[in-house]
Image (tube, rainbow, N blue to C red; front, side, top):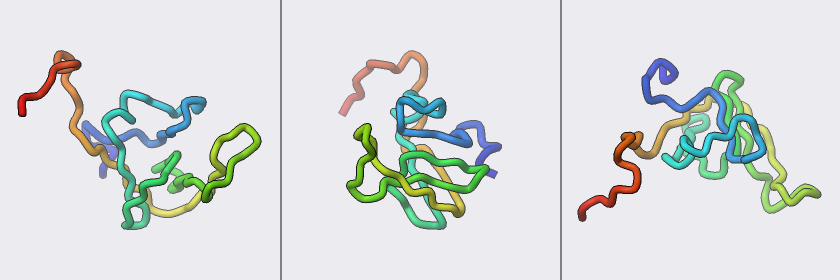
Amino acid sequence: MAEDAPDAPPDRLSLDPRSPYFDEALLSRGVGIKFNGQEKTSVIEYSISERWIRVAAGKSRDRYGQPMTVKLKGKVEPYFESPPQAEGDEGVASEG
C-alpha cells in the first residue's frame, strides 16, 4: 500500500495553520489528491484511514472569515507533486 512507501504523505493533513494536522514542510512540496479516481484541487483537509476529504463549499465563509467546508466520503489517494529536498539543497538555485 501507499502507507508502506518510505516517501508517502501522512494519514491526515490540513491546509489550515490552526489545525494540529498542519505541516508546512510537507505542504511546500505540494500534495495532490485523487478522490474516487478523480483529481481534486480544492481539498482543505484529508484523512486516508477515515476515508474522507474536506472541500470548500463555494464562496461561503463562516463568521471568522474561514471557508465553509463539506466532508465527502470515499477513496482518498494523496501523493507528493515534487521529490523531497536534501538537507544541503535548501536555497541553492538550479541551473537552467
